[in-house]
Amino acid sequence: MTERPRARTRGRRASALLLTTAVALTASATTAPAAPSPGPGTRLDGVWRTDGYGMLVSVEGGGRRLRTYDTTAVSCLPGLFEAKGNGSGRFTDAEDAGVTIAPTGRGRARLDYEGSVGHVVLRRAEALPADCTAGPEPGEGGRPDPRRVFDVFWRTYAENYPFFKAHGVDWKAVGDRFRPRVTAHTTDDELFDVLSRMIEPLHDGHTSVVVSKHKRFAGHRADTTMPTPESMARMDKAVAEAVGAPLRTWAQGALSYADLPDGTGYLRITSFTRFAAKGGPKADEAELDRALDHVLARSPRGLILDVRFNGGGSDRLGVRIAERLTDRPYTAYLKHARNDPDDPRSFTRPVPVRVTPASSSRYTGPVAVLTGRLTISAGETFTQALEGRSPAPVRIGENTQGCFSDVLERRLPNGWTFGLPNEEFMRPSDRRTYDVTGVPPHIRTPVFTEEEFTAHRDSALTRARRLLTG
Image (tube, rainbow, N blue to C red; front, top):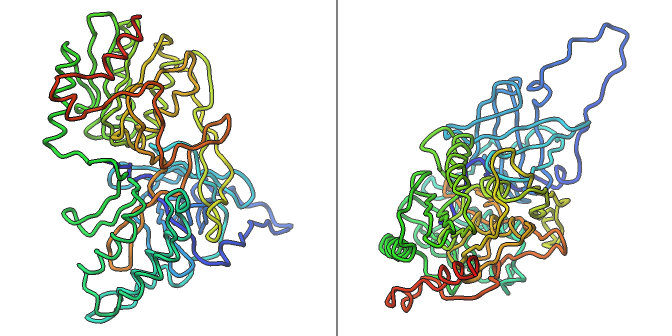
């Protein structure tokens, strides 16, 4: 439900030395003729550390190889993102997920993730610490010591997670409670149970522990029942019945649209990822544009955007829709990341994410947005990105889930992976965030409840149609 593009994998920090120092590039005075300027890829070669995200980025071979390393005060492990470049500063992994790195000054660079919004600041660092490439020391039976796994997991949350206070969780107390339960003899099943129980009280949809495809734990808000194939089919059937008009689909079913009899248009968006079967972010954007060209050519008297069931994906695709719904530029939100291992309220400098009117066809009429507790992640940042639009959309339904951040995806010494959020998305006007509570509706109605299903009723859609045609 909260799937994010692999290009957005993040990391944390390497050591106190790398946190507090950056090695600036210096030019040597010489009377010899100047050597030819190196290409952009060569200028990027070396080790960089991020502001926030705690990641080390190693570039080699004249900008042709990139590798990330995830770090804490007690660990440095190879990250989940490894890519090849062509010397231009752009790197792509095996799944067509990409990043771009561009120098911005003396010993500084900017890293952009395709599919994500904002950017990450890089600073020159020393060579990789030895433990980054040494690999974990084997424990009993040749496997990594479970205590080491626990320590990396606990420390990563301690240094990166911003929302302990909002959830009423004392993370140090959590560590003190569970650390004694892990020994050199702890089994994998026991360890998985410990790690899952540690983060379950956070009730955060961007927290997870993954052992394998079939064994994982993922958090969610306490009042939310996560969907099953059966419940999703039930929602789809209810929506089709309530719309009462043929739905045309795009993006492998993620986008569907209908012209309603009252002259309004209904656009349902069930995810912001994998709109195209292949081709990466550019292909996704092209498929989205194809759908929006059709929708906006209909000139609806009002537009209903339904994201009540949307598991997230690329924030950039949400901003791209917003750019088709405005004739003036505005700031969608500000984005920053936790930046101090010891202070949960210390963040990187906020990065504004802008909405710029698209050069292609646009719609500037009234909009209603249907939201619910299954509006998650990029579904929520999309909802937030429309707040600055004029005329402002009316939100109808329930609060969204309350998890906005990119997922910081990390690897444990035993090969398991886990995820957590480390960012806040803030309103430009007052720097308020909707984390934990979610974006509230202006008009509150039931969303996909048993009563609604039984009565063959869709209160949110009915209210939206009345509002736009009133």
